[in-house]
Length: 102
Image 1 (cartoon, rainbow, N blue to C red):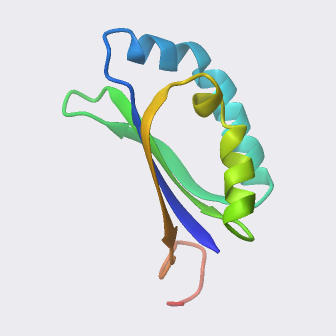
Image 2 (cartoon, rainbow, N blue to C red):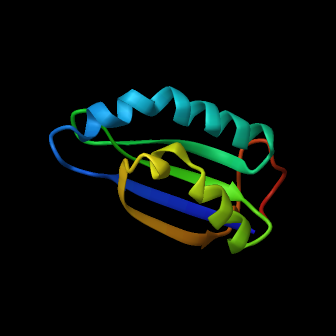
């Protein structure tokens, strides 16, 4: 099952600095999720000035319980970077590297 995760950072004056302080840890965890085959895509949401203000990812997990277990260990979750998170069941219809429409 695939899931779309959209996460919005906190908006206080120090939010970006806190994000940047643990970004390397977050990216290493993301690389592990990619190596496991669970993360299909991920990246930062940017504001009009190009500053990181959130994150998005599409994950392939066996079920919502597996997604929830993954989510609890995400560094941006553990360190309180994200303020509001949306999680939606998702269907990848087309993707580079996959043949055809599903």
